[in-house]
Amino acid sequence: MIRKVLIANRGEIAVRIIAACREAGLATVAVHSEADRDSLHVRLADESVCIGPPYAKESYLNITAIIAAAEITGADAIHPGYGFLAENAHFAEVVQECGLTWIGPPPNAIRLMGDKAVARKTVAARGVPVVPGSQEPLASREEAVELAQTIGFPVILKASAGGGGKGMRVANDARELRHAFDTARHEAERAFGVGDVYLEKYLTHPRHIEIQVMADQHGKVASLGERECSIQRRHQKLIEESPSPVITPELRKAMGDAAIAAAKAVGYEGAGTVEFLFQDGQFYFMEMNTRIQVEHPVTELVTGVDLVLEQLRVASGQRLSFSRNPKLSGHAMEFRINAEDPETFAPSPGTVSFLALPGGPGVRVDTHLYRGYRVPPYYDSLLAKLIVFGQNREEVLRRARRALSMFVVEGVKTTIPLHLRILEDRDFREGNLSTRFMERFLASP
Ligand code: ADP
Image (cartoon, rainbow, N blue to C red; front, side, top):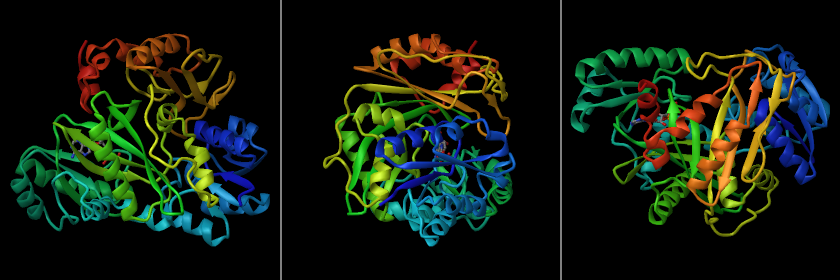
């Protein structure tokens, strides 16, 4: 049994986890850096502990300080949220070795999926389609060129340990690939401490479509439909929706089964996401994220399942609250409201001098914002998630325009004006999407 949950995170997701704990009747402990003393999660949790200076390395990534905070407060479980230590297998192990419940997948599942080259190989062995490419990290430039010539250019080099869009390089011919190979290795080495890179065919107009899975400790693995996340800038998602405008019930079933097979291949437990690229009717495994994701609310709205509450159930040994894969009903879309200049994308920290949050039919806002809040410059720029729900995509688009126009933040710049412009785009409105969408959108006047 879990009684008190320490939340090893900040921002909107810390607030979201507190909400789930409240509903489950669990006490909460917030941890925070010196820069986050006045943060909403600190105010809302039952207890709070300062774990260090502003820089994440010294606070939200400081394993010793977080474990000490759990011991001092008598917390018996840790929820890592997303980012920071959420996909750190070592941290998960330390949590368990200290006799605490880890609200996440088994450390070994995190480790296997955390190495992208290993993950590809593991799921391919279970019959999950992967993008054509290397089965092992590449030993040399010439091996890379030879392989690229068999699968055909363009190709993309990826860091095995990569994440967050870092360490990826596209090459259109052998000369570019030779050059990119060394750069990618150095970049990977510097960013992740491991220089291993592998290669995939580069798809020219794919959609990013991912499947939410949820698994309990009793061998049950469920799929909860897809999220289309093709609207991204520099591999960072901006808008996500479910269902995808192009996924038929047959494809949903096939992708759901593939995602379940991938999860089973590593003995998965808890909430996870299997990401696929989708092009010309075919889907290919890209990677599995072993955590709750930013965009989880769109799935909650179309399935009626509270995914964070479900994580708490699973971690305490209970069965999933549903027995069949939930059917999708209605349509949901999430808009990420970042503290960024909507044209240059430069970060925009500062004090929120005025705030009006939208509400009304079909609108949910997940946020840690309040009037007077100082957005610190140290962390990611996500301020709020506007999630809009309706019977169909048309209704969601109308409601989104209404909600975005009634979402007022002053004192910091936000991506709200950008979202309003995207909503007017013809391809977007028609559901004509690919991961290249933003490139085209930002280049057109
Ligand atoms: P990360 O873990 O760094 O986010 P991913 O492997 O999830 O990296 O890829 C991020 C994004 O990069 C994808 O959403 C997609 O837009 C693009 N991408 C990745 N692999 C390919 C590929 N083989 N072809 C085309 N685009 C790709």
